[in-house]
Length: 176
Length: 176
Image (cartoon, rainbow over all chains, first blue to last red):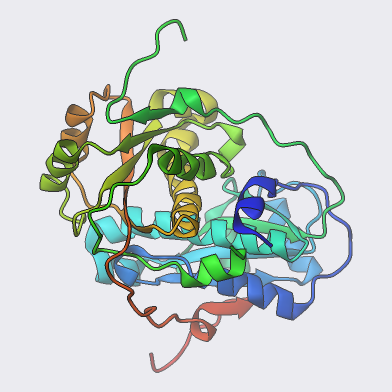
């Protein structure tokens, strides 16, 4: 699939079919995440693929932002000790958060290529997920990605463009 | 260009030719950013395209992470007041940071399709850039993206995969 098409046609999906996703597809999707750049090439991320239905339901119960019934999740985590070791405070507090987000966009795009719907989720109970997934304290879930074959085909939300793009200098917009 | 190819072949580029990038190419690259998802579809980002050489040099002087001599920059900012209005504290502190990173990956991929090199930069003087670009206090630069026709063709850094990917539960790796 053409990259420009994938970037423009990917939608956030919140209604899924109950067809399971093959393991090898899930692995390819995570691989796309691993190809993202990371600050100082630190690669301090950890990807936990969840495809056991009972676990998905446990996670859903503590994730207000997780909508619909996905057949798999990817929990994008960061090893905060390693991030600190590699990049100091900037690494732990900022780079690791951004790196998780950057990898997640690759994952969302690859999911689209595989015929899957996805949605990035940031509203969830971090400590609860750490406990459910047996994560030590320094491995922090930054983002959840829902995955499933889509059961909806939403229209793209209108995008702002002119009003958020400037050349060389910001100009305040009056009358907004 | 195929999406999987773009995801895998994009490299961070730090040596550039001095050929200028046409304005319409810069606009297409920012457009790709705008097609990224944003938390609650808030779209609180602002993209400032810098292609005046004097400004690039001023920014470079206060950005330790900015390497080489790019012919353009995109400064990815967030309107923190709007992010708070749309998403409360989570919106201002986390969603807006992640959204900037997610849009930046679309930008890096589109740049690659256009034959450009790019590098995401997080080490820069925020207040200094706000002053240089006439940004009010609530419009915060989150990320810089360097752009230019590449003058190098670096090998991909080795990617971790097996050691950062798990199914259903994290397992501590002994002897690391």
